Image 1 (cartoon, rainbow, N blue to C red):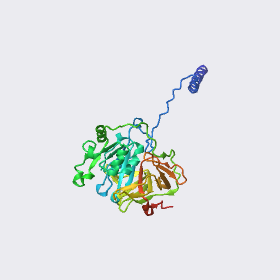
Image 2: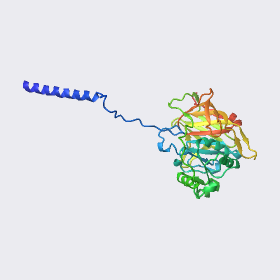
Image 3: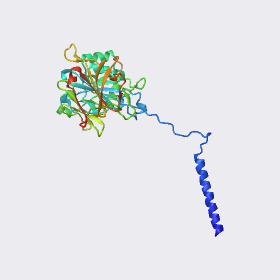
Image 4: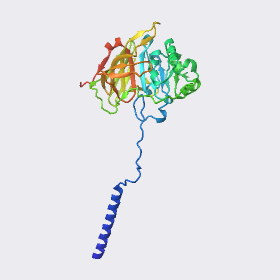
Length: 353
């Protein structure tokens, strides 16, 4: 029995030594062995939203900028909640019009109703080298499109190719409120118009996006009510659960018919600047070269200034001390408002403050 016990103990010791040796050998680094570690995956970011996960193959695809009707009688819109950035500016008659910008023309959802071009929006899409999708346009817009050689698809020319007329909607809406497009229709229009689809190089970031989650702004901004004219007011209410600002207008939620939900965005900019009547006494002349206003994100706000050095330059945003404003990654709503309406702006903070 003692002999058997010694044999078992010896065997157990031998197994323990072997296991120890295997463990050691697994943790010893052989300097001559090739490095088999996985290479780091390159992460690409949407240049208009700063969000990760952008498709590498899309980096050279041109953006598309779509003129969207925003008169009350034309609502609800479709696809507006999917835009990377929306510019809302005043046009004639006290109404506003939207330009919805998507970073990749391949990803255009059903969007509309689509309306006519205005020359001030051309100045915003030029530095993006965006394809301009619209239905008609003012004389000043037509002149700007020609002058700056903008690649545009006009519904007056390509209504049967790049646009769809919604006959069912036309039963309750005026005809001009019933034209839509999407990626497939846009691509058909691009082919027919023989428009270039690739950028010469990837777009630069529209803003300087923050890399961390912390927001340095301290002033609370849970509700923003911004009159843009005598009849149009853009309102934004912060939802802590989603971390987004929900938009309202005309006294109700700004609904995207496609989703049935209110439009909600990560960032809101209000830019106050000079807006004058053109010589025709109807259309607006908006000064985009500079302005001041406010930036809202994550339930906070800060005063900012804006500067655009030329037609083909991006609109830059700065803090009050002159530093570049860092922006939270996500979708953005950008309102350009006549300076005389700043006194009517209402901002409410958290109740506890």
